[in-house]
Length: 150
Image 1 (cartoon, rainbow, N blue to C red):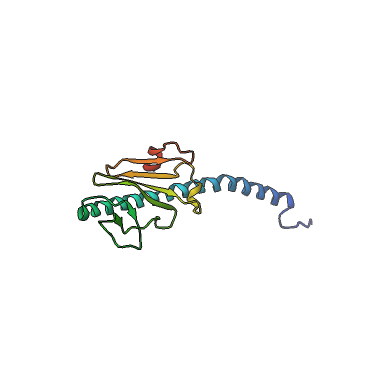
Image 2 (image 1 turned 135 degrees about the vertical axis):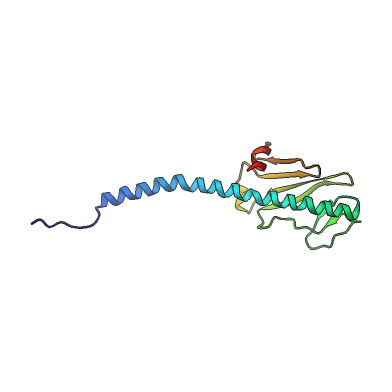
């Protein structure tokens, strides 16, 4: 009768480890890209919420707000709108670049301290009172269709 040991050899363990490493090297970057794309919705949502707040401000003040401040009450004379200057989880900074009685333009830019700053394809989003949507890459080139459509 032969006596046989049960278990795995070192070679078998090394093969399993190599397979796991290969799968991880494929899955992790893919997952990271998916998370970055999903987080873009936060920047878009912040701009769309600002659009609604700007229209409400216009109804009250007959002009659009040029300054956002979450801690100050809305003030028609000073053009201040009580609105957060960052998105819900802080991935994007929200700013109004221009505003007057005829329209406004705003931008959501990924903050340098957020993981969303690594999203080189959609670093900044823009929205105007006319509904014009824009987006810029980390290299400051337009990428409107990809960033607003997905």
